Image (cartoon, rainbow, N blue to C red; front, top):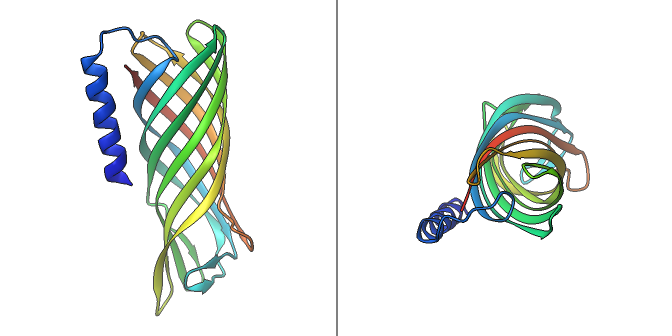
Amino acid sequence: MRTFLVSAAAAALAIGLAAPASAEPFNGPFVGVQAGWNQDKIGGINTDVGAVGVNGKKDSFELGGFIGYDHKINPKVVVGAEAGINWGIQDNVYGPGVTIDPKRSIDLTVRAGYLVNDKTLVYARGGYSSIRARTYLANANAGEDRDAWVVGGGVERALTPHFSTRLEYRYNDASQGTGKWDRHQVLAGVAYRF
């Protein structure tokens, strides 16, 4: 998936460089980077090595990238779709005799927003996330992809026709039935629009 996202970003960049400079804030394709705070809170979940008694949380630094497309459906309303990938740094969650290591997450989301002025978009986001995690026990370990749903919201501000910044909160639920895996994120990002 990482190769796909890098290839998609390169293709979008090539299209953007070949197209005339006609970028409009919050309309058309974009790529960007983001970083911020991540908290995983895990309690008694089932994993591919069995039920684990983790009952803890971990705050960590998150770093990632995204690619997407926005469309103004009228002068004040914007809808869009986005794919992103994020990695946590020192984000292991520990329990008695067990460690859960979230490796990365891939998000596929849609967003809808309202332009409070020509340069400021307030939006809500929702969609799907896949969290790749490895569980380590004393005598076994296994990796798995955990399905999660994502909701959130934020504000994005156009600095120029091509560049914007954003600040966003996201909540992920990767519990998958028994136990609990909540993820909270506050991410700041910079986007380039073609």
